[in-house]
Length: 126
Image (cartoon, rainbow, N blue to C red; front, side, top):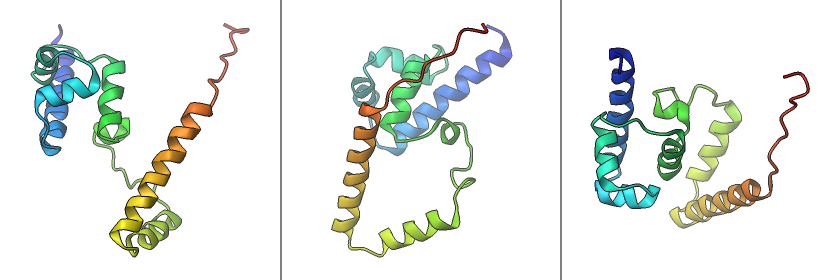
């Protein structure tokens, strides 16, 4: 594997390890949650094994991250004034109400994702 690609694989692996440790998960716990063997996760974290896109997206889902955030993009780069105002309103509520809102948003997102239809790819000009 060329040196540049090796560095990229190691960068992804170290980021996965950092996230796992920040969330106080063992390799076994995270591996179980994302459906891989603990030994494979260990090799991914060490940069010895490439992470498939499918596995990466499961990891991102586990930590509720976008791909840009995973690779260091500023998550507030596209934040609007309305977004900040909404966040302030939510944070002004009692903790229990904030948890209810978080659960409701999760419910709405899962409902939206389960009902959205895949878009068709126009291959007529391919």
